[in-house]
Image 1 (cartoon, rainbow, N blue to C red):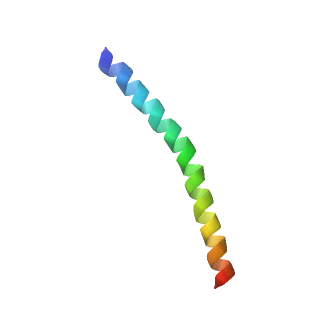
Image 2: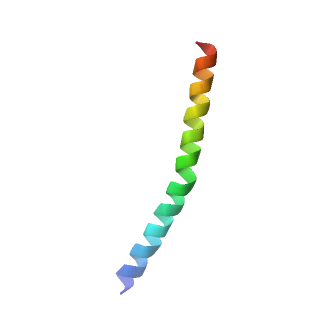
Image 3: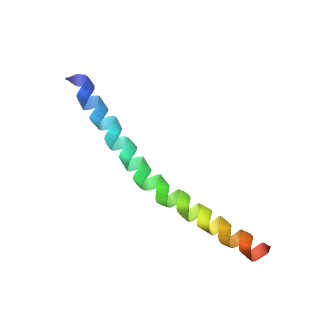
Length: 40
């Protein structure tokens, strides 16, 4: 049963990082896109 709990924790951690990093990444890319549009 220990494996199930570890798997659950890993899944939770993965979900948390996805939740944090995806909006962050999208924000960075949109900012980069705006900057490139401004300079070109």
